[in-house]
Length: 610
Image (tube, rainbow, N blue to C red; front, top):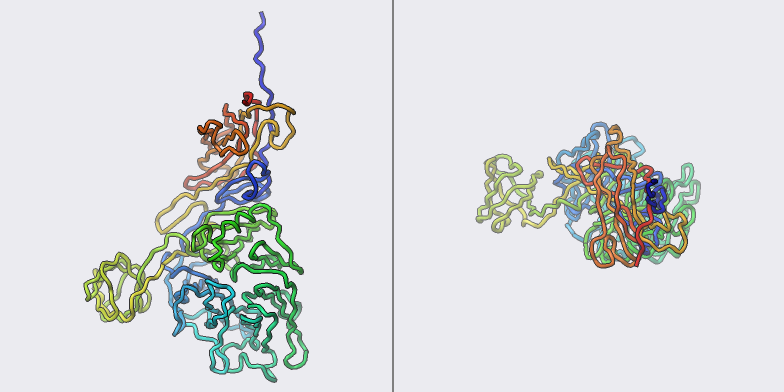
């Protein structure tokens, strides 16, 4: 007698293929993009775990507001700008490992937490090393502030302190900032001020004087009634330097006009009178286009000013931005992956702790949780260098004169007033200390153990933050000194059900649960590691209704299931069901990495839904 055949519920197999990007605005149920993720980017439309990072040094003064990278034969350097001044870090061009920190703070500089820094390199036409030109303006708490700040310059290859930029021995000051448009330096600020030097001449008495002969190139103009806050070079044609300048409500263009009349060598154009800028450090050039964030949207300039469309995380960014800290928003780019990163302080955070990312190749947006205060993109050095944000050490700093011996890091230091501490950082003529007991005072003498060094304190000890400098896109993990930890990365799909079947039409009028009966992993990996991904997990997150929390059933019980897998796993079979569900992939193991390929899912009609 023939056996009755078991009826198999209808099923379908399809590729898991959400659109690239992570949808934060709107509802997850309505999204066709990935709906959640961390430490994940997109290439060829597919998710890929971001690279790891390692500390180049852990003893830079922070919070750093600007970093400038320079490369010379045998000397790769990073100049670091913080509220306390300017430091120089030399690092290995192959490994990125940093050496000692050198102090280059100008004489007479007054530390201030509200200083914003701008810095640029001015190439010398005579072939000598470049100058670094920089500005420290006290407008961190108010981008529209008219308070003047000082301008400085220094040889990029030396260790001596920077000096003030002067005109006929009078210090120049501006409220906006400084940029180099070789062979000129521009300064700018309140009431639309845009002023330029004579070519390759910022340091002598005639560098900024307008006159005849060699001085006819210098110029001063007031182009708008609003403060000018940023400037960048613009391609202006053969022997025609040009620049873009951002005021609080305008985009301006300055173009050099060769062969003109005396004092008429510069042309000033208003490109847009209806734009805005959120922060001085939130503007970047990428392959000839200029991107920035305004007070309520993103912009791009490609010959005309246009809004940069963002239907993915525009509200997520502006609704969560700590607007009182807007001047700390800064931008960098990762050209290898086509990415522009805007770092910002979210919620009640007073320093940047997150980033929104625009991928110019994939034309999509996503985000990351990462605390960094400034950075330099990969150009001279092949990897991005980002500063601070985590593993911060709070210290006290003071200057001293040595009497005998050499102070060493980790020395126990005992002051004549009875205070004790541990030496954390040693600079020429200065110390940072931690684990402080008592109150070290100016004029105290001190003794160190076990080094035996002695000396005298010559300044009032003050609080100082000491931060790491990070080299990014390094393998897969976080490396801090001798400690290596995994970097968690995950990505969560849009929501699917049997009726849609991954956006495919399903049976009409059928209201049933959805059961994922099989998932076929397809992941490649990093470099020469073949298809090895390390241990990963896949989690099915069920929801009973569009308003249900992910992973929560109608009765409030947990509605999710997690399966481990690795490069040897051919398929994952299950009987888990829910009305609709999302699929989450996660890598959180040392050496773990993934790059998603073609993931096939088989769905089956589940039980009826009440």
